[in-house]
Image 1: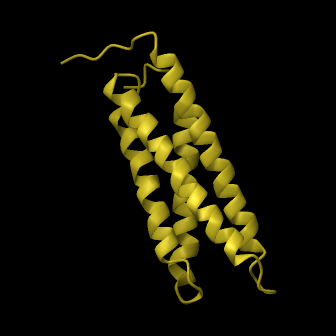
Image 2 (image 1 turned 30 degrees about the vertical axis):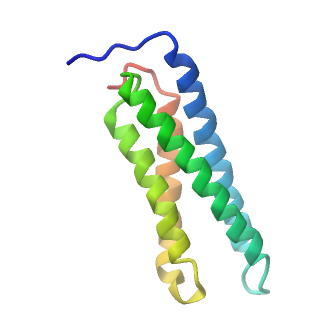
Length: 129
């Protein structure tokens, strides 16, 4: 079955782009607050609150990507990647304790690369199917 892009996909694509960029800003906020945690201690509650915002924003990004894919406006890879980033934010939260930083820090890099990839992909040409 062939999917065709319909004109109202432009609004959905814009929603995806905005959500993806807000996700990146949220990831940046997480880096800033994490950097303040060591060595002095720091705003753990701010970092934890930022994680909740990251869950919401990456979830909205994933929903927008899936909806856009279902309308034929992007590739399934983009929708899957956005979903993986969303799921990984919960893995990050689960491994965010001081005893599991050996998993949390590399995981942050994976989330960052995935979120950047989704954001860049969201601005690519719609013909990417």
